[in-house]
Image (cartoon, rainbow, N blue to C red):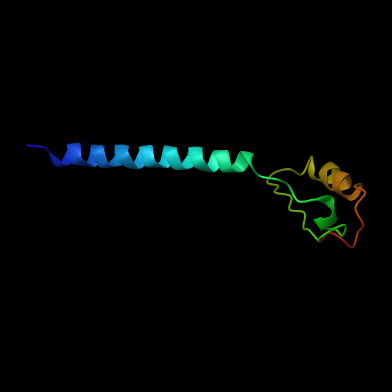
Length: 79
């Protein structure tokens, strides 16, 4: 008689095998991916935020913020 544990292991093994097959299929689909032509790409920049996680960084935070502010992005593009 087959125990419950053996059934669970068998089902999990089949699910794992199915997942591997699905990943292989998706990987082959990814290799056929063609990027959009340059005419479809936007030339405008989107706005973005800069998040600086800092904890007990009083010695380094000034240099970090100065480095961020020295970037070539327009001041209107980020907050």
